[in-house]
Image (tube, rainbow, N blue to C red):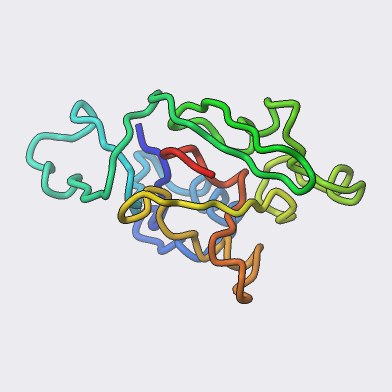
Length: 173
């Protein structure tokens, strides 16, 4: 199982800068068997059962702190004009779905965001959240180029991530 990994190549085609839909088109059009390469971010855990003999070095991941898929971690949400909410989430679960499951959290503030969100497809940018990662080395890793295009690179948005495009990889505020 991979968490917080990005597809970089499909059948020797570089897809790292493509949109989700374009990557899916490449995957659908590729012959079988499908060859896919991933970029693993800090905090990603590769279970030993998933590693083919002789490829241990290629699958080794150096991370500041690693959390196994399914590990329960603490998520703290701070919203304007509301008290902080602390709850537990599981590593590997989608951040957007986890936040929406907690009815006290208003991920989409305002009518435009409530009615105009893309439903988790990574297209609208309305689920952008600011993540504070206090762990040494940053367990959440860098945001993707795709997220940069949706959120923007202006000052003050460096810690923002699209909740729909990220799985929980560790504790977060």
